[in-house]
Length: 141
Length: 141
DNA sequence: ACGTACTGTAACTATACTTGTTACAGATAT
DNA sequence: ATATCTGTAACAAGTATAGTTACAGTACGT
Image 1 (cartoon, rainbow over the protein chains, first blue to last red):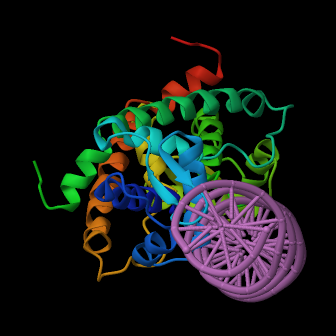
Image 2: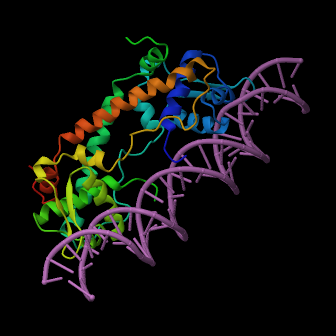
Image 3: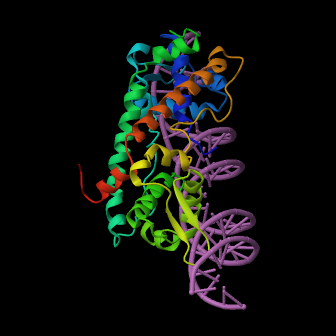
């Protein structure tokens, strides 16, 4: 289990919350649908809350609900909230600085990385949580 | 060292090969520039060779050179050749099929994943190895 | 005030992926 | 033949994700 599926789980969570409207949803119930542990869900909810996408309430009859309407939550925000990192990583160990290529390639790769990340962000920005809801409901507008 | 830096290393390798023209480059020499082990380089060269981006020669005075001109190698091909996987992963464990959301979200996420990957591919396709070479050389056309 | 029912989070384990390294078989030029 | 490469298997080490247990903190109802 090394592949990062946090974005997928986050979307699953948010879809459930969207369907529950203003009702507080317990992490246990979400965990049952995602098929994982409630703590894993709460960890993700923490990140989503930090990104102002959800609001949690502690205590009895607590739980979590969306902070905004599904139409106002873009998938780009979700992606950023769960910090999925970059599309590709730079060198693990810094390249040889004595080599003209090694010395310059890092900056080039870094720029390229930003370009790609921006492109992914823009593509994700085309979708809202509402559109995901509609797709899950089978309404392929 | 879990973050996948194969794409970054592949670009580094290809840049070196591009600079060497028709000359055979030894994996040891590339390794010195990338600052890693020669076997790591040979593994990547194997993948790049499988994608018809480079040609290797075994035996004495062997090595590797580009299979095509730098202008004819798109970064999208490089990305696919080193099989960097997808931008985000689907659920590790399958969601609860008894839940209407759990039952349908996987297909939705899978489609979204394909959309994003396509978007990344198109963005990378805008760049060729030649453009990377120029950037490394400081020629920001 | 007190018990109940939640969230938030720390700590630990299991698993898997990437990278580094050694070792050696196979190929090729001299 | 010998030296010099690639190709690849096998294993160790490091690190990230995900699963799990445990418990402190918070809010509601009585």
